[in-house]
Length: 461
Image 1 (cartoon, helix red, strand yellow):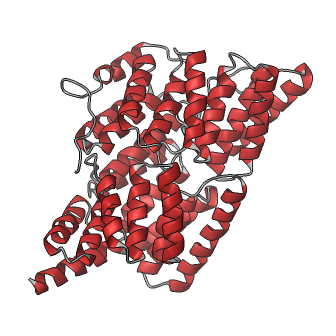
Image 2: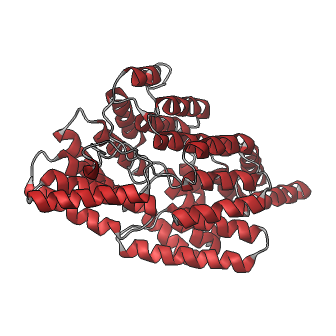
Image 3: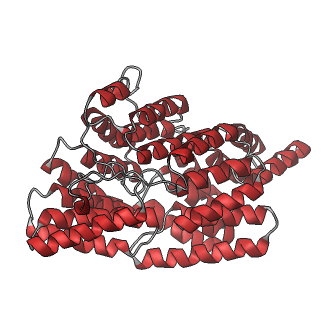
């Protein structure tokens, strides 16, 4: 760790988070959350706590659970379209329609929803240029979904000025600051979100702030509070997913499997929970079940991360033809995302570094760090530079990826291999041991390499 992590005074636990679960149960909280962002980076698109109103227009204003089906989402969209046709110039209905499209882009992994969202949200602003909070926060979430985090920050600030008492704006603001590497400001925005509305969306973000700083016990405790504050199956599934994720990152796949199974009992066939269960099964050596889970998750929502993970599992099992099929699917998905205006991210950089061309990975990594200087971008760029033989440059970015103290086996593995390439056996040994100690099964391809490299280092000593 090269710098001390930003922190709050005293014991550094967000003050409102101590009793947030109790307060959440005591209050009747106005729902602001499109929370089904499972399987992707938690705050990459600002979807938690997004929508100010999730009532189903086709159901007489009856509130629809966040984890509703694709059919229910389409009914809401059609209801809003009908409302717009009936009432003509209706900025609120246009803004709500834009929010629905943003959420659909995330939950279906269909980037064609992004242009629809952009059109609807700008139409809402044309009709009501000032004090249009719903459209402003929606445009912030849209920009975040496209990985345009500076634009996301601009819209989130505007939304927060319009309605400073609304937690959703603070959520998008915190997400944007996080991805821009402005961690102290992101932690402050999340704290404000917790103060305003200590429900599942805010508590999940608070958990993540501690996860970034390596405080995994506090992260887990806050996610437990998020689970207790869950008011519908979608919130429950969301919290269970991230509890499973935290367990995996701590090298506890059996615990992750229990959390995933508990979540699937609440929301059967949830793609995010299927994906995290697949990774737990992979770590436990239950590869056939893992493949089945990955395939089911992809059948529901073909998230690029799911496709890559299945391809790498097949590659680790020696099924190279099946792995290549998944990688081809991923490349097709990336082309669609680019056509929809979504920028490449760390996932794309790592894929290119591991399965494509090192020079292209370096170019993607350079762009990612410039537009999104988050820890994951620095880690991915470091790995791309390493693959291209530029290890001196790579080391500085690997150090930045770990500067907050994040407990990431993959980050430590990447830096360990960079140290090894530079001939620093002691530093390589330290990082590779830390990676395997954190999570012995952190990656089906890289974890075995870490073990073999440690063996070679020992033989060379």
